[in-house]
Amino acid sequence: AQSVSQHNHHVILSEAASLELGCNYSYGGTVNLFWYVQYPGQHLQLLLKYFSGDPLVKGIKGFEAEFIKSKFSFNLRKPSVQWSDTAEYFCAVNGYSGAGSYQLTFGKGTKLSVIP
Amino acid sequence: NAGVTQTPKFQVLKTGQSMTLQCAQDMNHEYMSWYRQDPGMGLRLIHYSVGAGITDQGEVPNGYNVSRSTTEDFPLRLLSAAPSQTSVYFCASSYTSQGKILHFGNGTRLTVT
Image (cartoon, each protein chain N blue to C red):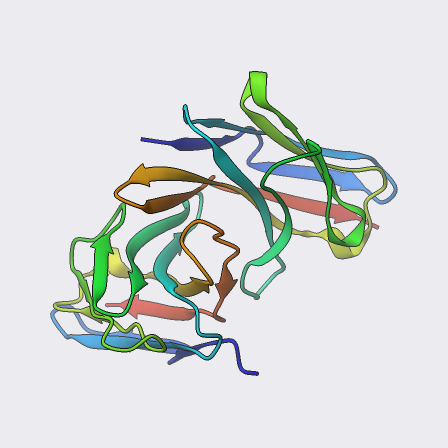
């Protein structure tokens, strides 16, 4: 079964600091990778995705993520965070689970608090 | 375009009661799913459907039933509510199971006393 591990439970940064959130997954086959963001009191929304091609993907609001296949990692980065980035971030992996079905598995989330 | 609509937004149940959480999407998505979100646990898949008439179990299906009689609707039924089912429930849909860019509803906060 596939699994997703997010290294940090809670990250606290000051505005303008750089951000990197770790995500590792375990799955032997081809995967699609995602980062979702959940702002306080809201539902999850897609931040960025990787399906194939350039392993460095750019998403909304200045976020980017790098897929490193050899390390089974898909870390999220942002050069300079803002207070409005305060949210919970979820890494997710979509892998083939057989019989034409794909299983999407979420990590447990990393809460980011940005201090003005 | 409403997207994914969940009702109700809040619900309080007593142990043993049953209820149905409604989910509807108007994007003609094949894939629909239900997750529960608990602090420190992330999102866990309860049930999913890859098309009308097809449902399957996810990671935590016990205590829940689903059906998919139409492409648009995917209700989640709690058969006999338990305090362990206190959670926030999200319905999500995507165009296909493979593409899996999920569109989420606004969630239902359920408390079982």
